[in-house]
Length: 102
Image 1: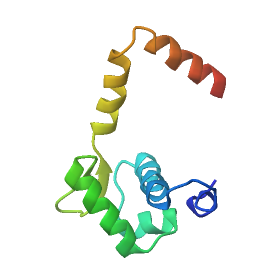
Image 2: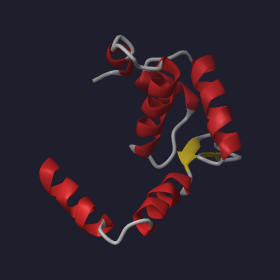
Image 3: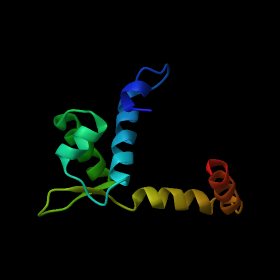
Image 4: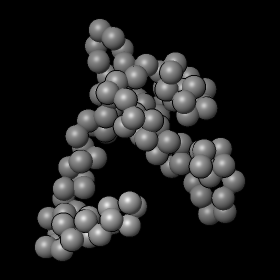
């Protein structure tokens, strides 16, 4: 479902939907430029740029100096890993969740 479609859902926060759309698109590529990224998520380059700058300042996104392309950092992985440390059953849940998708 596209971000534009989700945006019409009741009780959704459009900014959050846009951020996760950008994160998902970043997760599909090793690194990506802002023009291609904005086309993929169907947002203006200026909007994508502002979100990227915020995510960069929070440590979720990195910008490669010479290429000016963006990529995800390991911070999301660290959040998931922290969640797994909370419970001994995390591995079981992950396995069950992966099995449900298959």
